[in-house]
Length: 133
Image (cartoon, rainbow, N blue to C red; front, top):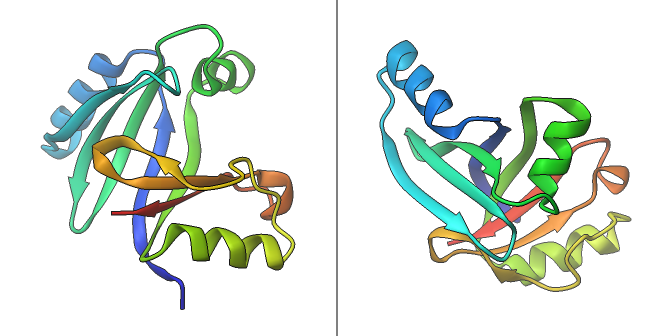
């Protein structure tokens, strides 16, 4: 089994501070990690839930995937991150099974992780992020 656990569920939001405040008020959640990922044009706040996260994310520039998602679909679930021990091996296995990769090879992600994305068209309608810590 290449998947070790759910790393995170990513929720695209228009206002990151407002979303964090909502989760704090509704659930008592606190931010475990917050980061701007310049390469992807996003800012994220990770809320720890057991060994996984809720990732609240927003775009920081007009050409980011999150900004485009929000403009087209509005706020909501953007992708699911699956934790793996070996991102390259998991990516290779998914492609061999017929998945369509967005990333040709693993790349640096937030909080020092290595990540690769799989297109929803090749993964039964769900954008998948493979996450290696």
